[in-house]
Image (cartoon, rainbow, N blue to C red; front, side, top):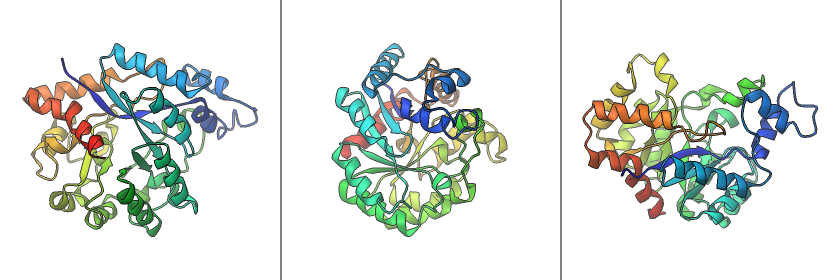
Length: 305
């Protein structure tokens, strides 16, 4: 039986839905628009407390035979919610939290994240308008090195679908998601492990040379990888997998399976798993290597830290 460790699961608490719905012109005047916005989105409103949401996710992971998952605190200040989930299920969840490096209090926030036993930082340059090698980020990488945190950096195009569906204006400035500028950081911080999602969203060229040299970059395979529709280098997911597996900067040892699961009733994205599993089967990837991608690589990474 295959073991699965999902590297990319957003923990959408009521606070997350409230945050995004309050940005929507349709719901911004409501004191608590969570339920109304959930209805518009066609999702179940999250439970009142994070522990109940964590229980729902464990039930869902059990149903799909998923052993573990990394939980993302997907808006600023969600580290307390993630802490409650990982305290309740320490053998099932590992916590990562979104941080804005441009916040003057960012260093204190990282220390709070560490005190709550989370294992990683989430950085979204396009969302918070910084480049991955800006001085404010460098300070966070220094803290990541000190506290042995993993750093997740979203490069390439960023779309926040919940904002689009609620009719909110996107705050993202895509130019900030510059993979080449993250490449410079891989060289400066070889002791820090970095993850970029969605195979790098077409921005891997600027990362390959430093990744070959320092071996501190991992790619997560999550989401539908819709960016492939606008990329001339790869025509489909199978070609993308084949290229990354052959590239010595990555290979199977630097790939982390992920789904980008978010809400109920959709729950865990088994469809993403099946699409990726078929691509691997079509390429003739061995069961030993598949187990590295689905579980062992991420297990080894989080255990190291």
